[in-house]
Amino acid sequence: MNAAPLSPEDPAQLGDFELIGRIGHGGMGQVYLGESQGGEHAAVKVIKPSVVDSETRLRFAQEVEVLKTVWGPRIAAFMDADPDAEQPWLATEYVDGPDLRKHVNTCGPLPMVLVASLGATIAEALSGVHKQGLLHRDLKPANILLGPNGPKIIDFGLAVFTESSASLTAPSTVLGTPACMAPEQANGVKPLLAPVDVYALGAVLLYAATGRYPFQAENIHALFHLITKPEAQPDLTGVPNELVPLLTAMLAYDPSARPTLQSVVQQCRAVIEGQGLKVAQARRRLTAHTTATSPQDITRVPQAPSPAPDPAVVADLPTAPATYTPTVQDEPAVPDRQPAPAAPAPGTPPPAHRGREQTGPPGPRGNAPQIRHSAQARRVAQQLRETYAQRAKF
Image (cartoon, rainbow, N blue to C red):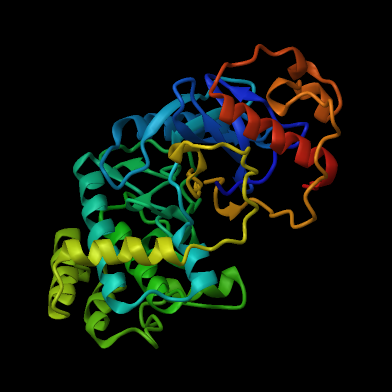
């Protein structure tokens, strides 16, 4: 698994989840790799204390309620949450793979037919979300995880019920990721409708095909100016000819000129079939490609020797994801590339039986009750803490 060691200040557990390592972080908090009492891995997002206020709690509670209602095979599933905790947290399905942004940055753009497969997959998933009365509103490469069973969408932190007039933002406030933001969203138009997600998906597919976004500028003000300028045209340089008509339509300034998500699925199918492939074949190729070329630059969780390792525990690692997953999973955990610590001296108790207090300064969490998980999970968690105590810096 890919993860960075826990720090001594990190919680040992949240709810019924034992925390094993760090898998991502962002401006709002930290994402951990966790394990439930039954052995299920999860991406556990925690809001950091410095940003916890009444509005943040409301937003976080809204995200939890949204995730309880949205579902589908391409959506990272909700597992548990406590928005009222001192440190609000949310656990979602752990997707074992990099996000699209990281993959493209490390391995380069996807081949044309795989971009079409990604488009068909995500468009179908978003269509299901819309049928549940929701918009994502912040679809971007970092919110698409490339797992071993295909891509999945994460981070519904900005999602809204399409029929709802309630808002936690002032009328002039714009939330979202500018690089993938539709013009009407950048202009602060309310209410937002389905075409905002179509535009964002077009930006995602453009990035998957070229490594670039529709508009690029020196600063965010210039970027907003380009996005909201009716006569400005997105840069489609390098887009395969087969995808140009579709991306041109998806990135249209006028929302009414954009295709529906169902039309996007059909047009992506046509591109795939035009290459002599079935959609299922293209999906398998996409998964095989992203799995074979997954970035390997995040520290791997140390694995204890075992004659017959559990595949569910030792499989390669969104996240968050990150998982989660996940708003705080935008940036990957910082890798630690220093040499591994020396082996314990003879007579040292095995890691599974050594207390957390040995890895850092004592604190209130030192007396927290220990959740009993698999021996392998406990060994991994303890090794991470020992590794951090000797060499990791965050």
